[in-house]
Length: 103
Image (cartoon, rainbow, N blue to C red):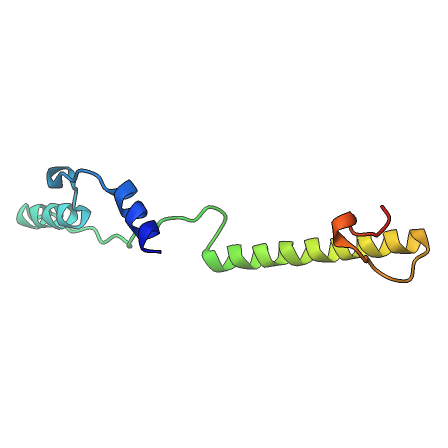
């Protein structure tokens, strides 16, 4: 585990130049102070939150679970139809043979 951690740290290590870092909070505060000094009204903006593609996390998780559940039900129904069409009463007996023994 230690070797894995060392590998990750080494692979992610890079040169850091603090002059390239932009502090967006500081920039916004300085801009607001300049507007106040100039006597202009201050705009109040709502905090920006990054938009998630497709909705919020909870909705995405719910959709994922629903899709998985539907997929499992569909697979189960297909297996039942296959078993019934072959005239067997029991389900798959050997998973290594594609789900049915003797295949």
